[in-house]
Picture 1: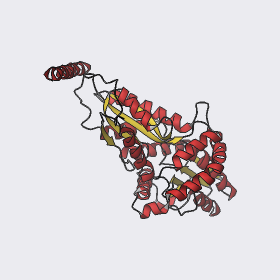
Picture 2: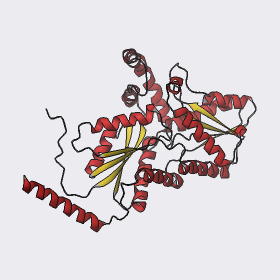
Picture 3: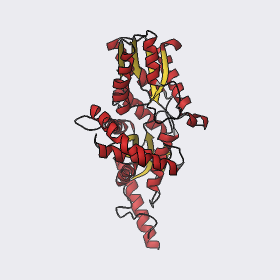
Picture 4: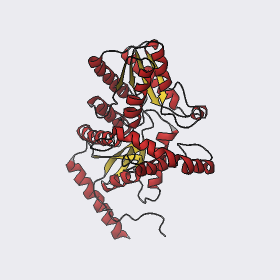
Length: 368
């Protein structure tokens, strides 16, 4: 059996492009039990996500979690599902399309952009296949994770290289490892907060809620927690906030193990009990609104705040496809595309290069 997949669509001498693959975490196909079971099985089977002895985890996952959690999760997804589908998929697709438009305006060389999900559809394998059809010989992996974590960025890298494992003509690869302190990212967050405050006023306390990770990942050397704290500090500084005007917390806990603290829900409950009447929450680690922002933060945590006496609670929406964020995403991409994009490129030069490449291929064939 052939080790590598055949590439019958290859046409020597055609102009080559640079590709950008925008990757987000993932989403089920529908807010239904069956779809959630498929999605959760793929997600929670990733050893980057759950670092438990595999035989034991297999029993827990297949014997308990996949028999109980899909129904509960489906109900939650149903509360945020839109006519267009999953908010995460819709927002990610819009970001990718907007990025493609910006790169056409800013880059001289041809750039193709595709988007994919680490779990669910469209898959990373499908994304790189699309870029291959677009004749990309270089691909930039752009995960929409501002802060690096082994369970997110590294997992996306695993999936990309697994998809390329049987390609014969493997493209050049670059990866955006993180952008937690990129000035354009911080500026986009600042603009989002200030625009929201211009309409709703300033709160007594700004809560910056990031997705949680197990405590042991920090102890084993994962930089995620530190990068979240740095993002929070830089955003606070850009807004002119003092230390007592904001707090960084962590959400979306799973299982019984200790996770990095403080926990978001516990934090807002404490604020409410302490008499802090007006709280705004932003989720800087989520560039696109999704279940964790629209349901967990905007609904569940809000209810917890009010139940403990809090008066006014606001969730500041994610960056989504706001012009400031698309501009920042473009800048981040261009920073990592340096040397791959020829500023002197023109369509005429591309045609000449294609002709030269084809002539070289023909000459090589004649010499055999």
